[in-house]
Image (tube, rainbow, N blue to C red; front, side, top):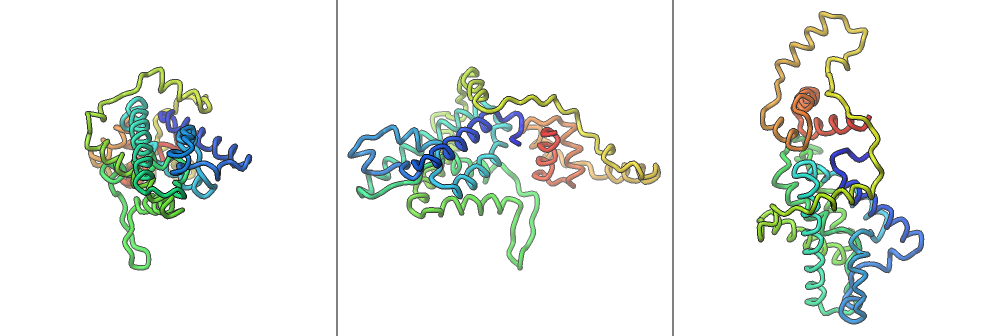
Length: 283
């Protein structure tokens, strides 16, 4: 389930899934996407809006929603109002760049994939700069990190239709880069609170009560005797998380005590601790 404290992401993912499935059942999703003919000859500007949410195929939908779901962490970092401004900036700018690319190609058969490529690939910029690597490992001698799988999912989406997907992806990366460069002080922009609240209402309401701070010692099985519990507690106390890791989780909106306990349980793996906290909120 999508995490609390990310209502805009929740609304966007739900809307994208519904639009893609609905238009796919009707057999109309393949007709979407920005094309030179539609924009410059038929002037079907409505496709600009339709292409914002709807993926062209089921594989693209799966990879796209997976990435959008993962990138919800940025909404938790900067808040729903600023994240909504990031969505609007990255998508509008990437669509504008898509139209420019179509004009430069001057190919009547040129067409780009439908879907929120601008938002997905713009999000890779803060992902690269702001999400730390917490785990490194090797597979058959090839080095990987805990971020590698996100990059591989993005690469799969980027290369899904070659030029039709690569160009929108590059436009999204440019939009994300300009946002990070704070062009026109865009990083200070916020949408009004009532708009972000409206977006939150587009997805299912959250009816779960607040989750108290997780007590790690409570997760020890009942058959463990007291001396072992004391030994476990002493080990835990010696694994005090780094302040930087705590600051990352607190900036995402988690309670400091819960973040500390999750980091201890995850052996200071920030991503694993994030998953522990999100799973705790889903129960």
